[in-house]
Image 1 (cartoon, helix red, strand yellow):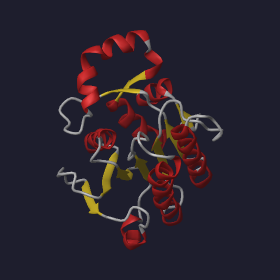
Image 2: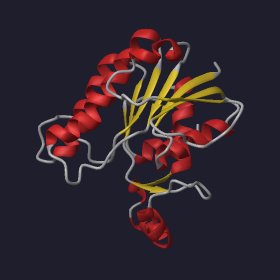
Image 3: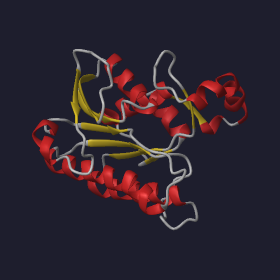
Length: 220
């Protein structure tokens, strides 16, 4: 089955890297990106919608039909935010889009980027982990069995992409050391993109994908 995918977050590091792999992949037929500002990427496969209100996607509902996958890569830091603020920017936005997509694209596969340490119990002491855990759990309720929660930790950037976080540029020389010392916590942005593409047609035995699972799935 050719993949027709909606990607969010393509103006950020992870979304841009996933979009890059989708453009390169012969398995991906078309890509729709939804952004608040242009991603400034041109390709015959690619269509972009500039949409300002990420709490209500009903105005573009007709343009979101006919897709069989969603790679939801957008996110914000929890630093400086209380739980209500972070939930609004994380849970509320995600579910606003996901609820609509589940209604108009039955059988859609969703891949959601959360992070290592996400709290599926929703009861832990770490605020961001609880919020991400609730988001993961509710996405699974909407899209199961085709819901996959990606939990990367340290990400090796894809060379040449413009939205690489400054932190990764600084840490770049140390990444081989981290990979040697903590192999279960280091994967590449390329592997995240390939794993998402592969899971659409090949599936996976787990809904929650830690770094070793992402690497395994990327090699399928």
